[in-house]
Amino acid sequence: MEIATTKTDQITVVSLRGAVDLYSSPEARKAVLGSIKDGKPKLVLVDLAGVSYIDSSGVATLVEGLQLAKESKCDFYLVGLSPAAKEVFELARLDKVFSIFGSEKEAVDKFGNRK
Image: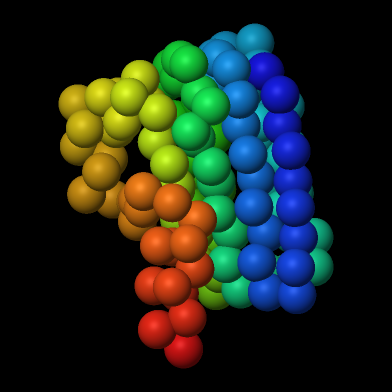
């Protein structure tokens, strides 16, 4: 799995690529939770466009990120779900729990309109 993080004043983007599974989810967890704790962004986007596989440990990492974001008064959006990730979120009905957008631009526009 590959992780890339980019930051601006208010927005942090965590891009995950490859398989997010039992072996790689601790690294993903560190990146996602760290992005919320570091600098207290107003919005965290997790880009899942490059995720080829995600299992329950990967999903649990994102749920934990959502919970921490709420506690930190930070918005937490998922963007660009790959077909594999989208299927998992729909099967688990987590597409009703997370704010999910097709692209970073859509998510940032929605965030900007909420201010």
